[in-house]
Length: 79
Image (tube, helix red, strand yellow):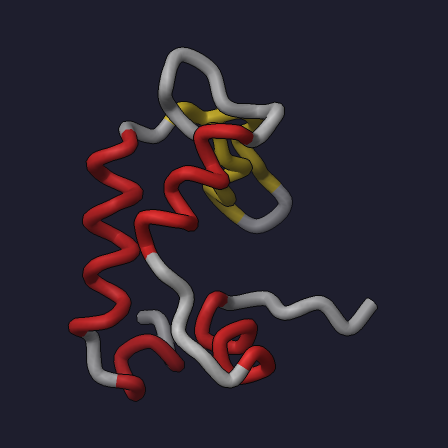
């Protein structure tokens, strides 16, 4: 579909960085959020997904902050 798969790709298309606070606020408004926690689909193994996994807002905020601190090469190739 041509949709960006990573935030960095979306930022590149927009030509501007995304604000972490605005991203968190959008996740709070998402229809899948429950009890103040965004919910995610997390891969556990090849072909195995956990659906609707609640992730604490602080964990998501730390992950968003960490992507800015990580060098580009570390983000490009997960180990």
